[in-house]
Length: 98
Image 1 (tube, rainbow, N blue to C red):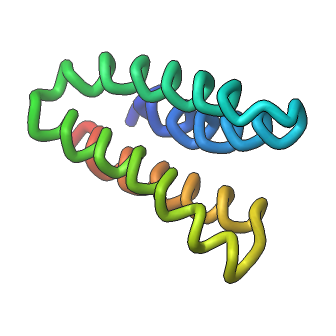
Image 2 (image 1 turned 135 degrees about the horizontal axis):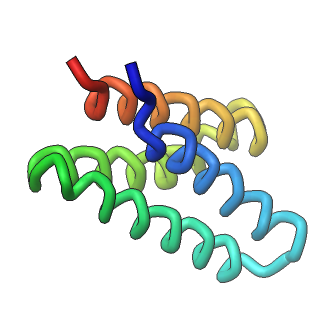
């Protein structure tokens, strides 16, 4: 069974986007990392059809949005890691080969 490369890349985009913003103090740099990774993943997901693409892109962006209120409850890094793991799980299920 082959792991779709978007599984780790989507998670790394969320983690890398936060890290870029956090360590540089430039939120827009984090946004660039997040957007570039999301665009690459969406291009890869598009090979599986528009429904899968929309669902996974929605998950990716939803995870980004959910990390903000979650961070107020559990902390920034734990929040980012949690939503990245959830995104990886969803991407794995949606892209696995039967």
